[in-house]
Length: 246
Figure (cartoon, rainbow, N blue to C red):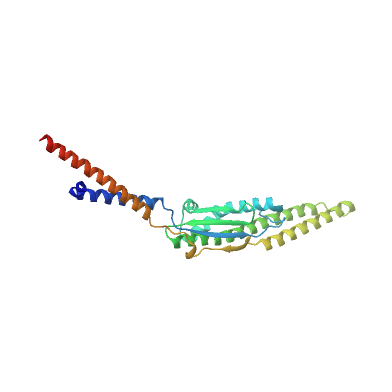
């Protein structure tokens, strides 16, 4: 202790540097504030346009995983970027962690941000954009499916003649099936809509906030005291040795 008091200026500098360095490292290692949102998906019918033929738990798990990937697609994040004024979509992706449930229709979205407000806003914008872009996707796929049916119907009509009753009867049956298929797709898409059953968005109270690195600062203080004591002792011992030689 006497050596530390003798070189107290140096010791103070060493301790302060260690505390500041440890605190800075603590801030770097502490995660940014994060907010979590949940999207519950509508269970798709077998005739849906997003994942045709989906039936059973295994299909639902695949569908949920597919929709989770769509959350970080250019379409969804482009919508988010326009709202938040962010052009770099990869920057937005880096701030998101999207996890699909393996046994239900739930997608969990965790968004990080510089502040709690940023995290909440990003998570909320992602859920909003997902619904909007899914509805656009459903509409586009529905239109494409109906156009394909119309083309098929046109080809069938071209086979109808006035003389071959068997061909005409088969064509009429096929046209009826195509009309029924088109009606089923329209109904399925109308029910599916944006594909969202409900959304749970985060609020300020649910945000995981960045904590002050108190533990790291305390460790820096202990390390600084040990280092300062060691250096002070070595300097004092060296000075005493020089005096003895003199």
